[in-house]
Amino acid sequence: MAAPGLFTPVVLKLDGITKRFGSFCANDNVSLELRQGEILALLGENGAGKTTLMNILFGHYVADEGNVLVDNGGGSLRELEPGSPHAALTAGVGMVHQHFTLAENLSAFDNILLGTEPLAAIRSSRQSARKKLQDLMERSGLNVNLDTRVSQLSVGEKQRVEILKALYRDAKVLVLDEPTAVLTPQESEMLFAILKKLASDGLGIIFISHKLAEVIASSHRIAVLRSGRKVADLPTADCNQRQLAELMVGHEITETVRDKGNPGAGLLVLSGVSAGQGRDALLHVNLELRSGEILGIAGVSGNGQTTLARVISGLEQVTTGTILLETENLSRATARAMIDSGIARIPEDRHKDGIVGAMSVAENLAIETIRARESQKFGLLRFGALRDRARQLIEAYDIRCQGEESPARLLSGGNIQKIVLARTLDPNPRVVLAAQPSRGLDVGATSEVHKRLLAARARGAGVILISEDLDELMRLADRIAVMHRGHLSTAEPTETLDRGTLGLRMAGHEEVDAA
Image 1 (cartoon, one colour):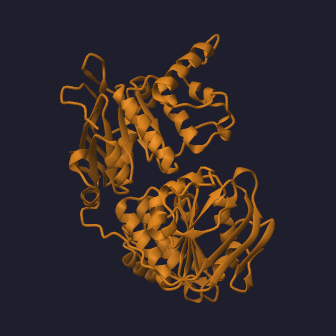
Image 2 (cartoon, rainbow, N blue to C red):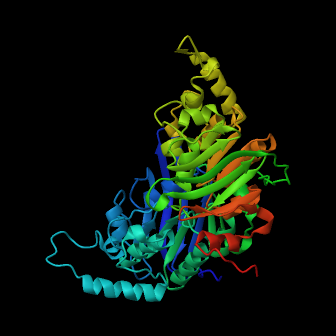
Image 3 (spheres, rainbow, N blue to C red):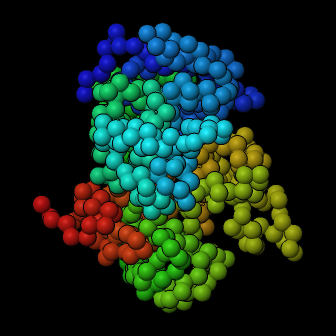
């Protein structure tokens, strides 16, 4: 993929951006340029400063030093008004967040038009707007039924609506945050084909991703941030995955490798389980997890995985069917009973369900073992013991914080996930439910998560790995089943499957030609 030449106009320039939060420097004199028609990948560990930099670009934050320059036409640049999302939109900067910002009860057409017309407008120019969108879809390949309610669209279609929102506003620069995090492999390939077409038509594109293979396959240039500083800015043709991983974390990454393993007897069995309502409901699910194995659950977000995780965690009651942990019937068990029985969970949303942000690291590490004898005496908490245990776990799991009394909300996503891992795995549970355990994590943090899950498997625990990342599933799981619209397929040995087959099943195509 040919990169734009040196004489191609610059459409965006970040010049010496520095941003501090108290004593913490999130961005340290970062400079970046984006040319017309260029696809720039932005890489970095969690907490490296990528999101802060993009928030400054889009006006959510104001830089302490430096400025943002945008295309002013005729090859010239002008300074963008700081701290104004409206100014960024007007200047042609569009952003597609990882978590979509769409009104589910409105049509795709109405979502795209929201905010584009003044409130005092006498009448809406819907006919001309529809014609403009039809032309955009024909040129870009971003096809979607404009009259369909967003709640009825697939994840890939919702993402197309988000991109169309930006293009409808005549974006010259498009920023995408983890654009393939919830897409099937086929949807991801289609997305990048569309992005390349948009770039060839002159759109400048920045995308943030932790998937190094797609970064190398789909970008012209790669910039790497580490600890708030830009440590590399290279043509993609000169890069490989190992080199990028080492640039991101500052040291060599040892790849996790699953050995053959020796699964034992059935440990956790779900028989005919139904639960929940609507699109995320479970419908007569059968599942068997054996000791000493990792059972992978693949599927596009919103097909029942969240309800499955809640049922196994005791957060949602089944309406039909049974749940057996060896001989113990847990069909009506509460979350506390599940924990006491040896079922531990890594929740899908670590910020919402994994920690209490206002509480300290030590308190978060003790949340699920607070009733244990070593944590209390005569009904009173033993704070000294809790702090001692926290210090041990902080060291064992390399949780980077300002001590056990630090508020958990101040930690990066990767370190918050380490808190969850330490709390989940330290009691040596019989079953580990890991829901999207590496979502949004950098290569270093992801490697640590994978090592911990394989270690739990090696000591005989059964691990249920729910993930939308097929590379993760293929690397870790002994068997993989696919969830689609509440139904769970029969789990098959990973060695008999490939990404293409799994991607088609995730999209609802059950019969797949082996060729």
